[in-house]
Image 1 (tube, rainbow, N blue to C red):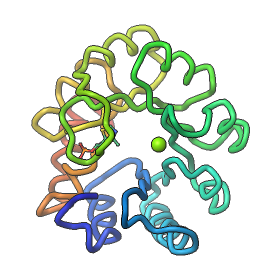
Image 2 (image 1 turned 30 degrees about the vertical axis):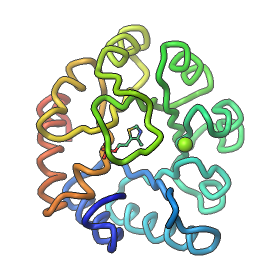
Image 3 (image 1 turned 45 degrees about the horizontal axis):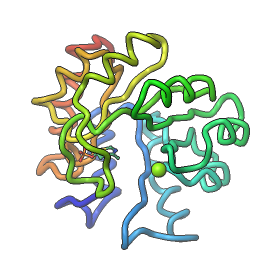
Image 4 (image 1 turned 90 degrees about the vertical axis):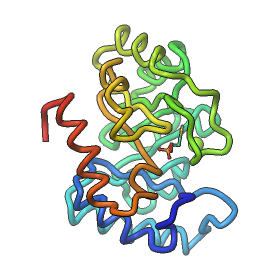
Length: 204
Ligand code: TZP
Ligand code: MG
């Protein structure tokens, strides 16, 4: 997570759940990433916590793990497994998220059966080393105009202070790492982000 809270990720997750996150995605990446059974055990700990709060638990990249532990869904990027194949593997009811950067990719994700698309990085990010160049909100605006029924999650450098334009461009939600995971008070930081979300989307 590249955060001051990285030593205790489960307590970060629990505080974020208390603060009101509505979805959690496990991104186990980097040189210290857990593998094999350790990764599975950690994933299941996160999954149990999410279940206690009634929050969907999604696995990034690792389709097989998601299927094995009966996660609520999977998120894949353009360089990961093909979204059409992932949809076939996980069946019609699990959540499928796909990262996209262009209108064409958004269209393909929709056709593949994506439940939502992730778009970014909206702003500069310190959490993804191989992130694409900063995209701003223009592409979100374009894609939300073309596919108004396809939920868009803005991602990349989003905070409570700069989230407004992301919603204004048509995003249904925001995905964050550092604004929550690196916060001194994780629950409060989450509440603050939730407040911005509710201001724009007006639901709980
Ligand atoms: N994809 C695009 S930017 C990003 C990902 C996974 C990282 C988002 O992290 P942060 O800390 O919210 O910028
Ligand atoms: Mg990926």
